[in-house]
Image (cartoon, rainbow over all chains, first blue to last red; front, top):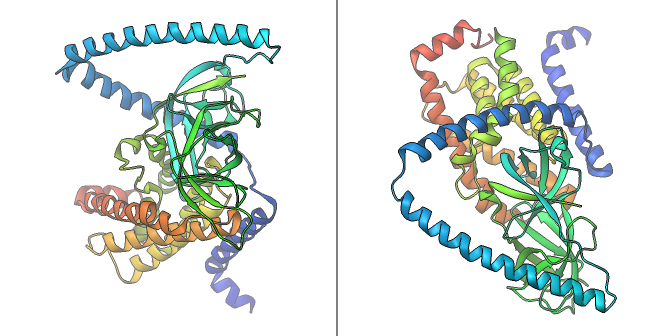
Length: 268
Length: 170
């Protein structure tokens, strides 16, 4: 017996490793995900991602900044016009916010804070059938903390999961580990949005709740991570099953996560 | 030289896949560089080394992601084992069938991961994932992998790899 084991030592070692990995998986299915040596691995991969992105961006900026200048003047004029328009819109919005603050104060309502943000660049994307995360180029040295909300002008991107001094990992709202409290904008019905790889699922929506395809889901602010009222996803499919107390609601993220390049991390 | 070569692969595959491969992404689908590397190592060395490298690379990917620890390690290990066995008995790096085998391995890996996800999280949209992610990803991986194999099959690259000890274990 021992002779046979010695003869096939390599085979048994590999079999043992497969068994070990399978055992690790079954434990996690029961008890939730383990996270070991996450920070050292992220530090090493983040370091290389910064270098690779830096070289790539440098080469691209040489091409786009010096070589590929066709139409730049026209684009410049269009952008200047847009900046002017946005400046005016910003002034009007600030006026409305001030007025809103004054009215809330007059009505004795709790004062809403205006979130400050840190602009970040996506330097790495990890999208596999089991997870959806991105690496951003800022970390604790820049004021990033765990569980801060990450958004773009279109809506919610996700939240900061792991923070290192110079990089951080953001878990996208389509990741299966992601959940966020949302509200249907049209009728203020609440639900919990869970990531389902490329789409999201709105959980615990009662069979009798009025929810339709095309409804916009916005953050409810109940999870203490995302400020209230930010667009999250649009309902794309609603199915009812009489055997279940809840409806199956599928929603598509408001942000095109596959094309994410920059985002804003909201400070608390 | 061989351990250094493998260390370099383990260090660089994840950041290269995460950053340099972003511009190659088509509608959110990217080729799986880790799987391609494990497949090539399997064809060039044999099942033993390819399985170990596949497991190590997969575990590193798992640690860096938010998925279950060991899931990609397990599936990449299976890919390494199968590719090594194929390389020993059926295929070589010049074979045009590599595109099919790579695509099939990539698809099987995604299906295995999706099945584990179904057990862990429940109601994973399996068929939508097959159509929008797994099949296009498998085809993309197959095509890029075959292109890389063509480059490796170039005599000078192959000689350089052999000089570093990356050859079949017999």
